[in-house]
Length: 304
Image (cartoon, rainbow, N blue to C red; front, side):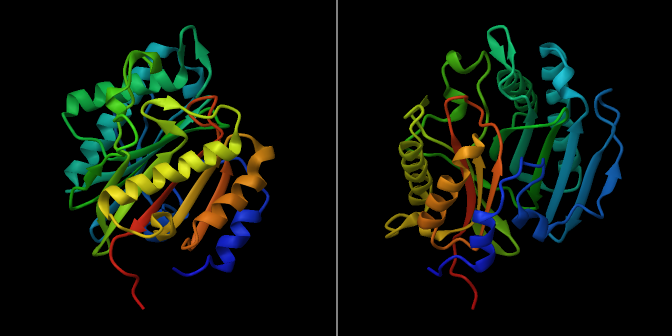
């Protein structure tokens, strides 16, 4: 595999800024939202529209819940449910299937008694999927320094194939200690982008089974996260000598700014085939987790 490009190396060592609620750069390269059309929806007082852009087989959509951070749990769960239903129906009406989601949740760890905001978000998402009776594609869910909750969806004409991690419990089978309704996402999805098959790996952290591992130990969390990324790739393309070296585009969520340099250097050392490494400060969905990593792997050789 080739070594990282100068762009990737520069990105890994740039000043680490708070995450902006946008899909990774590789998505913007395929479908920039700058010229997106606003599609009006009236299913909820919290949603005024969905930004949509399409090209060929692909479609990208973005929906925002204004002032979600100020919502009480019941209102927030209902608004998330409405947002998912609205965006799923719009995508379906345009002949596409969601293949990858990004959820940007303000104050993701803020408490509501026994619940935090991520648990409330999961309730709304779970209720939407129960109504849709749909299998979920892979997803990332991280906290942002904002008042609005944003969901981005990448969709394609061909439905993706969900992939699970043999080292982890499927998200929808989590025990109630992670909330009254479980998260609902696949660990990865096999999908076609520009006529090539890709493995889209969702947000991956130091979790084995359903349990967080190595609290307050950054090095051990990184090693466990790398092992989980490798396990997902190996479940699709076994017998790779170094599975993680096949990841082409990487995004890294850093929970504590003081860890940014160490995490960026470790990621650069391990992801030797990365063309691009994005590093941003974002809150991970569990307070004990220090880092989360996502990326994509092309399942056919690179074109010359």
